[in-house]
Image 1 (spheres, helix red, strand yellow):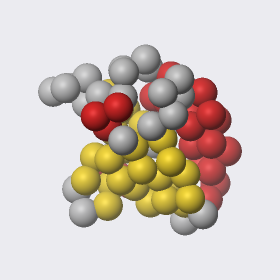
Image 2: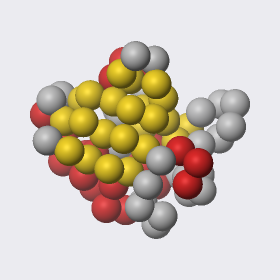
Image 3: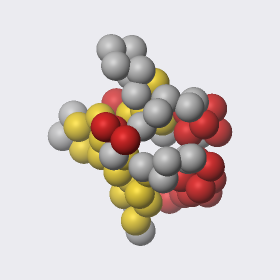
Length: 75
């Protein structure tokens, strides 16, 4: 599993992560900020997820493309 964390207050809603990796990231309908999709959230926290290894490349691409570097990926 890959751990992903989003610093949601720092998110600028650029759409990059949920466009590149919609299996993991989506736009929150209430505040428009990026969040981890419900399926992978840890304890219902939209800023924290545990994602299968087969999506690691997708997550890393999204993190690398984030202009404000608010996505942290850990093995």
